[in-house]
Image 1 (tube, rainbow, N blue to C red):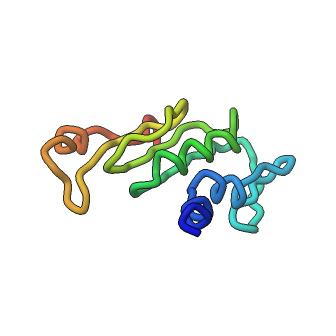
Image 2 (spheres, rainbow, N blue to C red):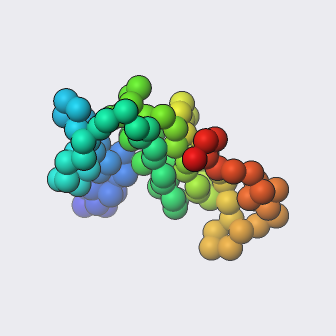
Amino acid sequence: MLAAGLHAADPGPLVRAALRLQGRRLIAAGQAYPLGRGRVLVLAAGKAAPAMAAAAEQVLGARLAEGLAVSNAPGPPLRRTRLLLAGHPLPDAACRPRRQRRPWSAV
């Protein structure tokens, strides 16, 4: 029963089930969004942020311009998403220098 509960809460499959590309539309949690010439960005926060961002990268592929994930723990490798490690629930000394940087390269 514990294994089933942990599997049900795995963020990767949950994101992949809620996010998909359908032609020139992005389907997110059942809502359709037209994809024009604009950029697609990903923002993930919390302990599961690296896993959620990795799943979003898999779904979005080349449509993903860039992403930002903020977590207190590392996760799977990310290709288009920048991972910022920060203390939780309060920022710690390790994340202070990072907060001066702009998280998005061109927003």
